[in-house]
Length: 292
Image 1 (cartoon, rainbow, N blue to C red):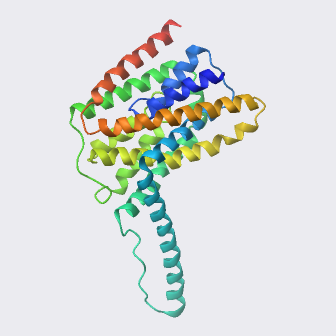
Image 2 (spheres, rainbow, N blue to C red):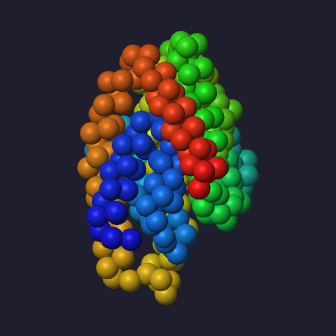
Image 3 (cartoon, rainbow, N blue to C red):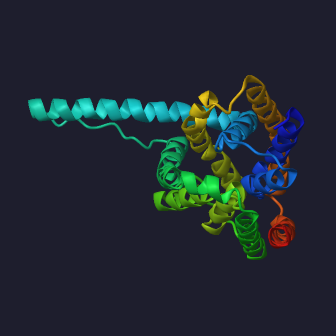
């Protein structure tokens, strides 16, 4: 892979990650027909996602900081409650435990944690299958078409409600985690699946976008550390590593502007246009698969 190709793929990642389009599906198809071959698993995709994390932090840094602070507060209260439990058992006292969920951001943090359970389970068990599926444009095409159908249904059904962290339930967070886990396969848009599912569950449109992107942070970091060992593989060289970093940086810059664009777009019912594009892109991917 050349530096030029890495930058181009980074731009594609930055655009498709923050719009309801499949970043992995587009990357898999583009790599296939540009003849880009790699032997480092999905390390490059993981690094591109790290690039988009910088964009997510730049856009949602206030919310991310609050969630992190509240999560640490939850851990501190859990440790304190454990000490109280031990004390009560030893002394027979009945000291009251600290309440864990005391704010909307604490609820937000717990929901992020809950959503990670199915995401991690699907991502870990399907790791090899994901790598193999990226070699077949037909799978990417099918995933893109399914994403398009979901976008169209969400848009035409005027999905969305008023739910924020206080009203959302933990089983709904699990469903969003399942959608995020499925999106590891090429063709399925992570943002498209999670935002559409959140809207169908009654999330408010701004909160659906916020939850979708912030919930991706632990998943992306986990995926990166699962693939980081590829840096020491025989196929990895210093120049290839530099190319990967360039791709990551281009994804970060492009992703920042696309995230800003989506925040404006989400207040309008414009998902159908991405659905039409998905039908076109998915159809082309399937056609190229049968014609090649």
